Figure 1 (cartoon, one colour):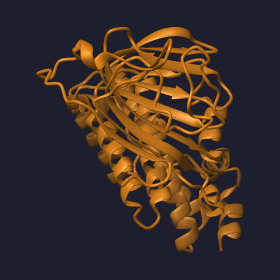
Figure 2 (tube, helix red, strand yellow):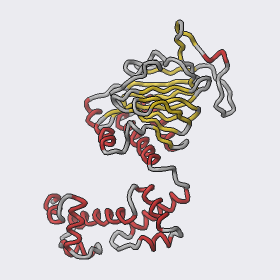
Figure 3 (spheres, one colour):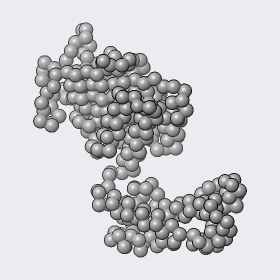
Figure 4 (cartoon, one colour):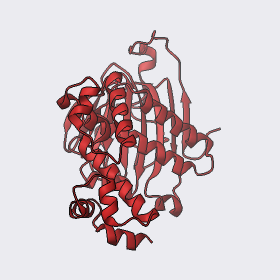
Length: 330
Protein backbone atom coordinates (compact mmCIF):
# COMPACT_ATOMS: atom_id res chain seq x y z
CA UNK A 1 0.00 0.00 0.00
CA UNK A 2 1.20 3.58 -0.62
CA UNK A 3 2.86 5.41 2.26
CA UNK A 4 1.60 8.78 3.47
CA UNK A 5 1.95 11.43 0.75
CA UNK A 6 2.58 8.70 -1.83
CA UNK A 7 0.51 7.73 -4.83
CA UNK A 8 1.04 4.93 -7.32
CA UNK A 9 -1.54 4.75 -10.10
CA UNK A 10 -1.85 2.22 -12.92
CA UNK A 11 -4.40 2.91 -15.65
CA UNK A 12 -5.22 1.01 -18.80
CA UNK A 13 -2.09 0.19 -20.82
CA UNK A 14 -2.00 1.07 -24.51
CA UNK A 15 0.41 -0.62 -26.90
CA UNK A 16 2.00 2.07 -29.05
CA UNK A 17 4.91 0.22 -30.63
CA UNK A 18 7.35 2.65 -29.03
CA UNK A 19 5.75 5.68 -30.71
CA UNK A 20 4.31 8.73 -28.97
CA UNK A 21 0.64 8.29 -29.93
CA UNK A 22 -2.58 9.70 -28.47
CA UNK A 23 -4.48 7.38 -26.16
CA UNK A 24 -7.81 6.00 -27.39
CA UNK A 25 -10.77 8.33 -27.05
CA UNK A 26 -12.18 6.45 -24.06
CA UNK A 27 -9.00 7.10 -22.07
CA UNK A 28 -8.62 10.77 -22.91
CA UNK A 29 -10.74 12.41 -20.24
CA UNK A 30 -12.15 11.81 -16.79
CA UNK A 31 -14.59 14.57 -15.76
CA UNK A 32 -14.41 15.57 -12.09
CA UNK A 33 -17.20 18.12 -12.49
CA UNK A 34 -18.35 20.48 -15.19
CA UNK A 35 -15.41 22.02 -17.08
CA UNK A 36 -12.72 20.25 -15.02
CA UNK A 37 -10.89 17.26 -16.46
CA UNK A 38 -8.54 15.05 -14.46
CA UNK A 39 -5.26 14.15 -16.08
CA UNK A 40 -5.19 10.52 -17.25
CA UNK A 41 -1.94 8.58 -17.34
CA UNK A 42 -0.88 5.03 -17.97
CA UNK A 43 1.17 5.06 -14.76
CA UNK A 44 2.03 7.63 -12.11
CA UNK A 45 4.18 7.47 -8.99
CA UNK A 46 4.99 10.34 -6.64
CA UNK A 47 6.35 10.70 -3.14
CA UNK A 48 6.68 13.75 -0.94
CA UNK A 49 9.35 13.38 1.73
CA UNK A 50 9.73 14.54 5.32
CA UNK A 51 12.81 16.70 5.85
CA UNK A 52 14.65 16.65 9.19
CA UNK A 53 17.00 19.34 10.58
CA UNK A 54 19.84 16.92 9.81
CA UNK A 55 18.73 16.70 6.17
CA UNK A 56 18.64 20.50 5.92
CA UNK A 57 22.15 20.62 7.34
CA UNK A 58 23.37 18.56 4.37
CA UNK A 59 22.81 21.71 2.25
CA UNK A 60 20.84 19.80 -0.41
CA UNK A 61 17.66 17.85 0.28
CA UNK A 62 14.76 16.43 -1.71
CA UNK A 63 11.17 17.42 -0.92
CA UNK A 64 9.44 15.30 -3.57
CA UNK A 65 10.04 13.16 -6.62
CA UNK A 66 8.06 11.15 -9.13
CA UNK A 67 7.41 10.05 -12.66
CA UNK A 68 4.39 10.00 -14.93
CA UNK A 69 4.03 7.81 -18.02
CA UNK A 70 1.88 8.76 -21.02
CA UNK A 71 0.11 11.65 -19.30
CA UNK A 72 -2.71 13.40 -21.16
CA UNK A 73 -3.63 17.08 -20.58
CA UNK A 74 -5.81 17.64 -17.52
CA UNK A 75 -5.87 18.52 -13.84
CA UNK A 76 -3.19 16.70 -11.77
CA UNK A 77 -4.10 13.98 -9.31
CA UNK A 78 -5.57 15.59 -6.15
CA UNK A 79 -3.19 13.48 -4.06
CA UNK A 80 -0.53 16.12 -4.70
CA UNK A 81 -0.46 18.32 -1.59
CA UNK A 82 -0.29 22.10 -1.42
CA UNK A 83 1.70 23.96 -2.71
CA UNK A 84 2.58 21.38 -5.40
CA UNK A 85 -0.95 20.86 -6.71
CA UNK A 86 -2.09 23.40 -9.29
CA UNK A 87 -4.33 23.85 -12.32
CA UNK A 88 -3.03 25.20 -15.62
CA UNK A 89 -5.08 28.38 -15.51
CA UNK A 90 -3.40 29.49 -12.25
CA UNK A 91 0.09 28.02 -12.52
CA UNK A 92 2.09 27.95 -9.31
CA UNK A 93 5.05 29.30 -7.38
CA UNK A 94 7.03 26.92 -5.18
CA UNK A 95 9.56 27.66 -2.43
CA UNK A 96 11.78 24.92 -3.93
CA UNK A 97 13.86 24.19 -7.01
CA UNK A 98 12.65 21.61 -9.51
CA UNK A 99 14.10 19.56 -12.37
CA UNK A 100 11.71 18.03 -14.90
CA UNK A 101 13.14 15.56 -17.44
CA UNK A 102 10.98 14.78 -20.48
CA UNK A 103 11.74 11.36 -21.97
CA UNK A 104 8.85 11.03 -24.43
CA UNK A 105 6.35 13.29 -26.18
CA UNK A 106 6.00 17.06 -26.34
CA UNK A 107 4.65 19.68 -23.99
CA UNK A 108 4.36 23.34 -23.20
CA UNK A 109 6.32 25.18 -20.51
CA UNK A 110 5.42 28.68 -19.40
CA UNK A 111 7.12 30.83 -16.77
CA UNK A 112 7.42 34.40 -15.58
CA UNK A 113 10.65 34.96 -17.50
CA UNK A 114 10.33 32.72 -20.57
CA UNK A 115 6.76 32.92 -21.77
CA UNK A 116 5.34 29.84 -23.47
CA UNK A 117 7.90 27.37 -24.85
CA UNK A 118 7.47 24.00 -26.55
CA UNK A 119 9.58 21.28 -24.93
CA UNK A 120 10.36 17.90 -26.43
CA UNK A 121 11.85 14.56 -25.36
CA UNK A 122 15.45 14.95 -24.23
CA UNK A 123 14.85 18.22 -22.37
CA UNK A 124 15.49 19.19 -18.75
CA UNK A 125 13.36 22.05 -17.43
CA UNK A 126 14.48 23.76 -14.22
CA UNK A 127 12.07 25.62 -11.96
CA UNK A 128 13.18 28.12 -9.34
CA UNK A 129 11.96 29.22 -5.89
CA UNK A 130 9.41 32.01 -6.08
CA UNK A 131 9.22 31.96 -9.89
CA UNK A 132 5.74 31.38 -11.35
CA UNK A 133 5.55 28.52 -13.87
CA UNK A 134 3.34 25.82 -15.36
CA UNK A 135 3.70 22.95 -17.82
CA UNK A 136 1.49 20.40 -19.58
CA UNK A 137 1.49 18.05 -22.59
CA UNK A 138 0.43 19.48 -25.93
CA UNK A 139 -3.29 19.05 -26.77
CA UNK A 140 -4.38 15.59 -27.96
CA UNK A 141 -0.98 14.07 -27.19
CA UNK A 142 0.72 12.56 -24.16
CA UNK A 143 4.17 12.75 -22.65
CA UNK A 144 6.37 10.94 -20.13
CA UNK A 145 8.58 12.74 -17.63
CA UNK A 146 10.47 12.38 -14.35
CA UNK A 147 10.59 15.16 -11.78
CA UNK A 148 12.22 16.14 -8.50
CA UNK A 149 11.86 19.10 -6.14
CA UNK A 150 14.77 20.06 -3.91
CA UNK A 151 16.16 22.88 -1.78
CA UNK A 152 19.19 23.92 0.23
CA UNK A 153 22.16 26.24 0.19
CA UNK A 154 23.96 24.25 -2.51
CA UNK A 155 21.52 24.89 -5.38
CA UNK A 156 21.08 28.48 -4.21
CA UNK A 157 24.83 29.06 -4.55
CA UNK A 158 24.84 27.47 -8.00
CA UNK A 159 22.16 29.94 -9.08
CA UNK A 160 23.96 32.90 -7.49
CA UNK A 161 27.17 31.97 -9.30
CA UNK A 162 25.41 31.89 -12.63
CA UNK A 163 25.43 28.16 -13.36
CA UNK A 164 21.64 28.21 -13.77
CA UNK A 165 19.16 31.02 -14.28
CA UNK A 166 15.35 31.28 -14.22
CA UNK A 167 15.74 33.23 -17.47
CA UNK A 168 17.23 30.15 -19.21
CA UNK A 169 15.50 27.18 -17.57
CA UNK A 170 15.10 24.92 -20.63
CA UNK A 171 18.20 22.79 -21.24
CA UNK A 172 18.51 20.46 -24.20
CA UNK A 173 20.34 17.37 -22.95
CA UNK A 174 19.22 14.74 -25.44
CA UNK A 175 17.78 11.43 -24.26
CA UNK A 176 20.52 10.58 -21.78
CA UNK A 177 20.91 7.18 -20.16
CA UNK A 178 22.91 8.80 -17.35
CA UNK A 179 20.08 11.20 -16.54
CA UNK A 180 17.50 8.42 -16.68
CA UNK A 181 19.57 6.21 -14.36
CA UNK A 182 19.85 9.06 -11.86
CA UNK A 183 16.10 9.61 -11.76
CA UNK A 184 15.32 5.88 -11.55
CA UNK A 185 17.85 5.37 -8.72
CA UNK A 186 16.38 8.34 -6.87
CA UNK A 187 12.83 6.97 -7.10
CA UNK A 188 14.02 3.55 -5.96
CA UNK A 189 15.52 5.20 -2.87
CA UNK A 190 12.31 7.16 -2.25
CA UNK A 191 10.37 3.86 -2.24
CA UNK A 192 12.77 1.73 -0.19
CA UNK A 193 14.14 4.39 2.21
CA UNK A 194 17.60 2.85 2.80
CA UNK A 195 19.68 4.38 5.62
CA UNK A 196 20.66 7.91 4.63
CA UNK A 197 18.20 7.94 1.73
CA UNK A 198 17.89 11.74 1.77
CA UNK A 199 21.65 12.13 1.29
CA UNK A 200 21.71 9.42 -1.37
CA UNK A 201 18.88 11.15 -3.24
CA UNK A 202 20.75 14.45 -2.91
CA UNK A 203 23.67 12.76 -4.69
CA UNK A 204 21.29 11.85 -7.53
CA UNK A 205 20.17 15.48 -7.75
CA UNK A 206 23.80 16.63 -7.96
CA UNK A 207 24.36 14.23 -10.84
CA UNK A 208 21.23 15.48 -12.60
CA UNK A 209 22.40 19.08 -12.22
CA UNK A 210 25.88 18.18 -13.42
CA UNK A 211 24.55 16.67 -16.63
CA UNK A 212 22.26 19.68 -17.10
CA UNK A 213 25.19 22.06 -16.57
CA UNK A 214 27.22 20.18 -19.19
CA UNK A 215 24.30 20.47 -21.58
CA UNK A 216 24.13 24.25 -21.00
CA UNK A 217 27.73 24.54 -22.25
CA UNK A 218 26.84 22.99 -25.59
CA UNK A 219 25.72 19.84 -27.34
CA UNK A 220 27.12 16.51 -26.09
CA UNK A 221 30.41 15.57 -27.71
CA UNK A 222 30.73 12.43 -29.82
CA UNK A 223 32.23 9.55 -27.86
CA UNK A 224 35.49 9.77 -29.83
CA UNK A 225 36.04 13.34 -28.63
CA UNK A 226 35.06 12.46 -25.07
CA UNK A 227 37.63 9.67 -25.13
CA UNK A 228 40.23 12.09 -26.45
CA UNK A 229 39.51 14.56 -23.63
CA UNK A 230 39.77 11.77 -21.04
CA UNK A 231 43.10 10.69 -22.53
CA UNK A 232 44.40 14.26 -22.37
CA UNK A 233 43.39 14.72 -18.71
CA UNK A 234 45.12 11.45 -17.81
CA UNK A 235 48.33 12.55 -19.56
CA UNK A 236 48.28 15.88 -17.74
CA UNK A 237 47.72 14.15 -14.41
CA UNK A 238 50.64 11.81 -15.03
CA UNK A 239 52.95 14.69 -15.99
CA UNK A 240 52.01 17.12 -13.24
CA UNK A 241 55.65 18.02 -12.46
CA UNK A 242 56.50 18.85 -16.09
CA UNK A 243 55.90 21.80 -18.35
CA UNK A 244 53.59 20.71 -21.15
CA UNK A 245 53.38 22.30 -24.57
CA UNK A 246 49.65 22.09 -25.19
CA UNK A 247 49.98 22.53 -28.95
CA UNK A 248 52.35 19.56 -29.09
CA UNK A 249 49.94 17.57 -26.92
CA UNK A 250 47.12 18.33 -29.35
CA UNK A 251 49.32 17.28 -32.25
CA UNK A 252 50.14 13.98 -30.55
CA UNK A 253 46.38 13.36 -30.26
CA UNK A 254 45.89 14.11 -33.98
CA UNK A 255 43.65 17.12 -33.50
CA UNK A 256 44.10 20.84 -34.12
CA UNK A 257 44.93 22.91 -31.07
CA UNK A 258 41.81 25.10 -31.36
CA UNK A 259 39.57 22.03 -31.57
CA UNK A 260 41.47 20.34 -28.74
CA UNK A 261 41.09 23.38 -26.49
CA UNK A 262 37.36 23.58 -27.22
CA UNK A 263 36.75 19.86 -26.57
CA UNK A 264 38.89 19.85 -23.43
CA UNK A 265 37.11 22.87 -21.97
CA UNK A 266 33.69 21.34 -22.62
CA UNK A 267 34.83 18.16 -20.86
CA UNK A 268 36.48 19.75 -17.79
CA UNK A 269 35.19 23.32 -17.65
CA UNK A 270 38.79 24.60 -17.90
CA UNK A 271 41.28 25.31 -20.68
CA UNK A 272 44.13 22.74 -20.85
CA UNK A 273 46.76 25.12 -19.46
CA UNK A 274 44.58 26.19 -16.53
CA UNK A 275 43.69 22.56 -15.80
CA UNK A 276 47.38 21.57 -15.68
CA UNK A 277 48.26 24.65 -13.64
CA UNK A 278 45.62 23.67 -11.06
CA UNK A 279 47.15 20.18 -10.90
CA UNK A 280 50.57 21.74 -10.25
CA UNK A 281 49.14 23.94 -7.48
CA UNK A 282 47.48 20.91 -5.88
CA UNK A 283 50.80 19.06 -6.05
CA UNK A 284 52.48 22.06 -4.41
CA UNK A 285 49.99 21.85 -1.54
CA UNK A 286 50.90 18.17 -1.07
CA UNK A 287 54.63 18.99 -0.98
CA UNK A 288 54.11 21.90 1.43
CA UNK A 289 52.07 19.71 3.78
CA UNK A 290 53.95 16.43 3.48
CA UNK A 291 57.64 17.34 3.04
CA UNK A 292 60.29 19.65 4.43
CA UNK A 293 61.16 20.97 0.99
CA UNK A 294 61.67 24.73 0.87
CA UNK A 295 59.41 26.95 -1.19
CA UNK A 296 62.33 27.47 -3.59
CA UNK A 297 62.80 23.70 -4.01
CA UNK A 298 59.08 23.15 -4.65
CA UNK A 299 59.04 25.94 -7.23
CA UNK A 300 61.95 24.32 -9.08
CA UNK A 301 60.47 20.83 -8.88
CA UNK A 302 57.19 22.00 -10.40
CA UNK A 303 58.94 23.93 -13.19
CA UNK A 304 57.99 27.47 -12.17
CA UNK A 305 60.31 30.20 -13.42
CA UNK A 306 61.45 31.16 -9.93
CA UNK A 307 60.23 31.42 -6.32
CA UNK A 308 58.53 34.77 -6.94
CA UNK A 309 56.59 33.43 -9.92
CA UNK A 310 55.51 30.34 -7.97
CA UNK A 311 54.45 32.38 -4.91
CA UNK A 312 52.48 34.85 -7.02
CA UNK A 313 50.56 32.11 -8.87
CA UNK A 314 50.00 30.10 -5.66
CA UNK A 315 48.53 33.11 -3.85
CA UNK A 316 46.31 33.95 -6.82
CA UNK A 317 44.87 30.41 -6.76
CA UNK A 318 44.59 29.90 -2.98
CA UNK A 319 44.46 33.36 -1.40
CA UNK A 320 47.62 32.60 0.63
CA UNK A 321 51.34 32.51 0.00
CA UNK A 322 53.04 29.08 0.09
CA UNK A 323 54.55 29.87 3.50
CA UNK A 324 51.19 30.98 4.90
CA UNK A 325 49.58 27.81 3.50
CA UNK A 326 52.19 25.62 5.20
CA UNK A 327 51.68 27.45 8.49
CA UNK A 328 47.87 27.28 8.33
CA UNK A 329 47.73 23.55 7.53
CA UNK A 330 50.32 22.28 9.98
